[in-house]
Length: 436
Image (tube, rainbow, N blue to C red; front, side, top):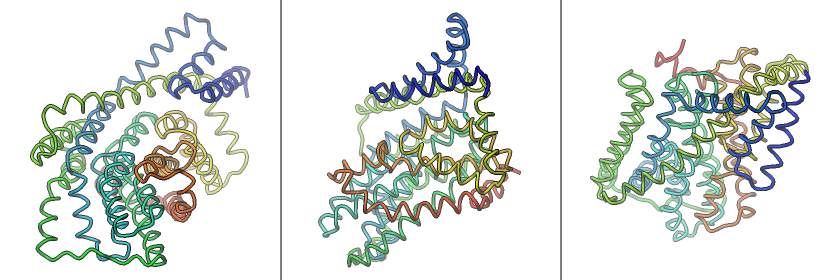
C-alpha cells in the first residue's frame, strides 16, 4: 500500500468508527471522516473546493429524482388503505395453506413491498393490520413476528426499489430498468423461502387454515385489489416497454397512488402536506448521504484503495467461487452494522472492480449486493426492519432471534443460489431486451 493510501485508509478507519460509537449520524461521520482523510493529503483550500464539488456532482443525477417520488408514493400508499386490500387478496389466493394468516402476511409483504419499494413500510403496514388477527386466532406472537420480519425485505428486491437506483449511481450508471427486472426472481425466491419455513412450523405447531372464502367473496376481493396491483403493471410494464424512464415512472406512481387513495376515501387532501413533509425528511437523509459518500468515493479512488483491496482479495485465491463467497461474507457482516444505502455507496466501488475482473455481470453483482444487505435489515444490531417488526409485535429483539434462525438459514441457501446461478437474476432482463 502506498503512503497516500495508508494515510487516507487509516484516517477513515479510525475516525468514522469513533464518530459512530459516540453517536454521530452515519452520514455526518462519513462526511467528517472523508474530509479529514483529504486533509491528510491536500491543503485546506483544495479540500474545501473538492469536497463541495464532489457533493454536488454526486447528487446531480437525473436518475436520483426517482427516489423522492418513490418515497412519496410509498408514504401515500402506507396511509391510503392499500395494505388491507392486498391482505384480503392474499387471503383469497393462499388462505387454504396451513398457517394461513402467516402465509397471507408473507405474500402481502411481497405485494406491498413491490408497490411501495420499502421493506420497513411493508413490515409496519402489513404487520400492524394482520398481527391482531393472528393473535385472535391463537398464533404465537414470536411465530407471527418472525414471518412478518423475515419476509418484509423481499420488497427491496422486487421493483420499484430505491436501493437499486442507488446501486446504479454507485456503479457508474448501470441500467435502472435492468436492475429492477433482475430483482424479480430473487425477490420472489425470498418470499417463497419464507413461505416454506412458515409452512413447516405451522404444521409443527398445529396451525390450520381458518380462512374459507366462497367464490363470490374471492372475486370481490380480487376486483378490489386490482387497482392497487395495476400499479406494478403500469410502473414495470412502462419501464420495460420504454413508455417512460424509471424517473418518470416514479412520478406516475405518485399520481396513481394519490388518485387511488382518494378514490378509496382513505386519505383527505388536508393530509397531503404531512405526506410531503414525511417524504422530504426521508429523501433529505438519503440525498445527503449520497452527497457525502461521493466525497469518500473520490478520495478512496485518488488513494487507489479499491485497487489495493482488489489485489489483496485476488492474492488470497484466484478461485471466483471462493472470492464471491468472501465478498458475500463481508457484505453480510456490513449489513449487520450499516444501513443498505451507505453500504452500497461505500462498498460498491470497492467490490465491483473485483467482481468484474472475475467476469461477474454488473447487474448480477447488484442483485447479489442488495440481497446480502437486505438480510442485514433483519439482523441485529442495526436491522431497521427487525426493529420495526419487534415494535409492531410488542416484542423485544431477543424474543425473535431464535424464531428467525430458520429463515436466516433458508435465505442463506437462496443467496448462494442467486450468487452462483447468474441466470436467476439475468434471464428476465435479457428476455425483456434490457441487456445483452
